[in-house]
Length: 276
Ligand code: HPA
Image (cartoon, helix red, strand yellow):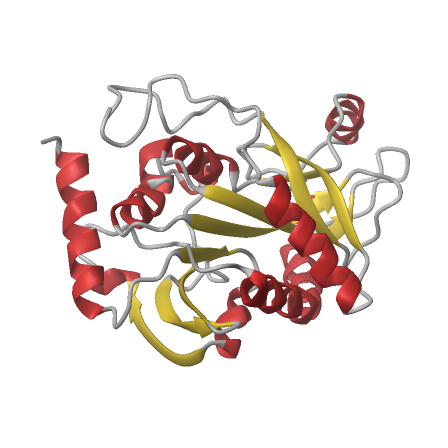
């Protein structure tokens, strides 16, 4: 067994020994969205540091805790904090938590993130359901020997994001009077933000939003045969013709404000999910 696989199964075994039930749904929370964990019923948690082999996050807004309990009446695992390529983590390190979730038999993965808006019809604070993505990171978590028991060598990427889950997110938004957008997420490595020309380019290739996360996780999760729902909070607008400053503080603030909307949408989606 490779060292990576040993680390994944060690971490999964440790987490399993802590869980009270067997969740089939996991949520990865992004920038400023960690508060979602506060609506979990009977939460229990451990720091990533306590999990053998688990990577520890370096970004302040991503504390790095694994939380479990119930949301919308369903057992869930929440990964509060994630790893980014721009922090210097390899694609395998970024996707490590997804492999742990795969061993824990997670079937549905909900990925949230903060993103810059490119579609001129969007405004800061909007929630966007990810329809598809464009991987511009130059990286891929499946590079290297394929683990056939985890998934196939050349996974089909026609439908990364589950249309049924996307539909449920749209319905959940409508039920709360929240207009939820649907769009294409372009993933870059970062950490430098986009130039106006890059934003124009991203618009031209069909992207509605841009960010520095999600892609590595989504590719590993496709390989792991998970159903994926991706939700972006549009924290700032990237208009190439009228560039405005983007600060991390503003991003976190807008994400924090929209987190309540996202939480409501999320728990409604979970309520409506059938137990498999
Ligand atoms: N670009 C990249 N990532 C982001 C942005 C952005 O404008 N906003 C929030 N995350």
